Length: 424
Ligand SMILES: *Cc1c(COP(=O)(O)O)cnc(C)c1O
Image (cartoon, rainbow, N blue to C red; front, side, top):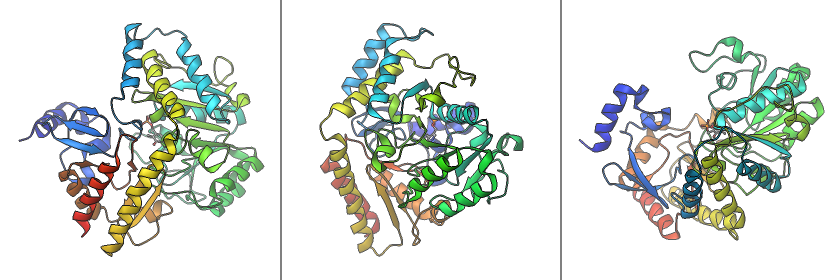
């Protein structure tokens, strides 16, 4: 028995499913989760001493690779000054200024502790500002685990949202309307029916929680136009895409300005951080400036701010950081495409920047329904092969592959060799 297997056996006795977040259990790929002991650069080391080339990066935050010395140093220094004060600090002001300097749509920002919290709070601010209740979300987009966002995918236009999880009262999701990703006509229909009641549309500007689904030409522009026409707010959930697609996220990459944006993952440099921000007139609704209540004992935590500030400054100050990362990622994804073509496999490889996803289907993947046509058994076989080759992919078909800056050309070639071995 491996150490990971033993730890999992102990874990399941005391932690639901043995893990503190479901996908970590490797359930959909039929493997035992690897328990990670440490990580450095592009590599994870598990409890048994096995090394894996990491394409998950803690689900996004570790865009610089693991244990970056400048980030660690910043956290160590902050820790020595005290772990939490429950009072305002300079680092929080610096963080707010840094984000609003980088991202034009952010005039004000509030720090929280997770992406879930950021979304929940942004939705509340949007409702408080507009005085409306309904929220439009897209099937297959994930916005954290707050009640109103856990709505069954694929609900029709006129159907009130049906909760996707036990323990969520129908009352909590009755104002959540579900639309089809990349289908602007569908969004127009929803607005024809409910326009006056819709507080906001929330969208992942690149869908990265149903595998990776790119916004088609006109989709984000269409959402911007519809929201403006109806006095509804457009919320970009950039928890994954923020500081990843470009320094100014997907909004910078695609040139669309949302009213509110949510952040998480990269913004914390590996520490538990989230943030929401945007238009001043909306953000001034948030307590204590305004009547929308939102608070957090550990929000803006000094060690967490230090990690985020160090990482974001590195991203900003490293010349050609994104060009270089995207070029390497492009080499990986086009290399995979060549192999799959040669193998004559039924596949779709969706990718943008350092995000990608290989779907085992012959249908173009452009929304939740087409993502679901992927053969998840085939994915599981591929996943297990890659893991044996020492390459750590997200243990689910419906997650992204994250390329970090720590991955070298040589490691890209090594990855392609492992892919080739599986398909050819
Ligand atoms: C991960 C994620 C969230 C939730 O963030 P947590 O920090 O896990 O709560 C929300 N939205 C998107 C797009 C995400 O990828």
